[in-house]
Amino acid sequence: MDNLVVDGSMTIRDWVELADANLDIDGLEFYSGFLELQDSRNWREARKIAEEKGLTIPMLCCSPDFTHPDVEFRRQQIELEKGWIDMTAELGGRFCRVLSGQRRPEVSREEGIRYAAESIEACIPHAQASGITLIIENHYKDNYWQYPEFAQHMDVFCDLVARLPTNGFGVNYDPSNTFLAGEDPLELLERVKHRVVTMHASDRYLAEGTIEDLRKEEDSVGYASRLRHGEIGKGMNDYDAIFSKLAGVGFDGWISIEDGVDGIDQLRRSAEFLRRKMAEYWPSK
Image 1 (cartoon, one colour):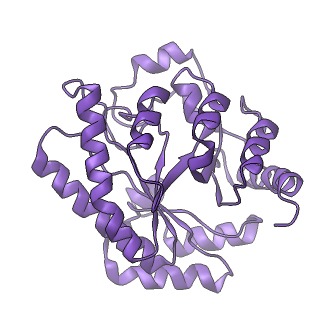
Image 2 (tube, rainbow, N blue to C red):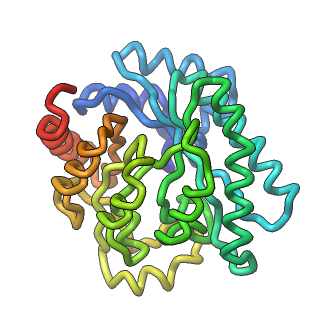
């Protein structure tokens, strides 16, 4: 991420060519913070680079911060999200992520849910006009945030989702993030399975310490250093149970791989694992 977002040492073309040469995938999820995407004149070229390799850009991963107590700040975040929706459409995508926002200590549970719900609702018509579905993730923390996700915990997440419409809005399910909340990913999936339209496949592990140690570091900027994305299929997630539940409710959406911190070979193995599992549960795809 830092290579594409912070120092520019990797270009979008570099990433697409690396992925195409090494991975059995159908598309690439992009992040709104990629340096090259900050100039809208590059959006069409980025799509062209992917399409030249037979790839699509189905999802744009964005991190709007809708839980700030200042109404003007929230208005600015809504406008940012609308810009990212436009970016998604220009890239050829169909799904654009939203989040609730940061879990600021001065914002109450009810205030945060209301702020986030009102802000997301304000973005839905703009997305629908371009054929884009907004997707909210049960997130842990954006790489570049100070505080963790406001709706990190299951009860808050489900209450927020319940306040939002089914048309033009859905859930991006990430099982690993539920572990970080000290909760059961299968319980969360059971509660939101009918709202899931996309998924982040990942497996997490702690390089050192415990979940309790991790929580002590939640207010540090970015991910705590002890947290790692591991090879998919090697961690704590039960992908047979997850895919069984998703297939059982007719899910057939995009599954985006979150892995690769230890190199392209690890990412390749994760992609191969997911291909095998997807063939089991969606044999006609």
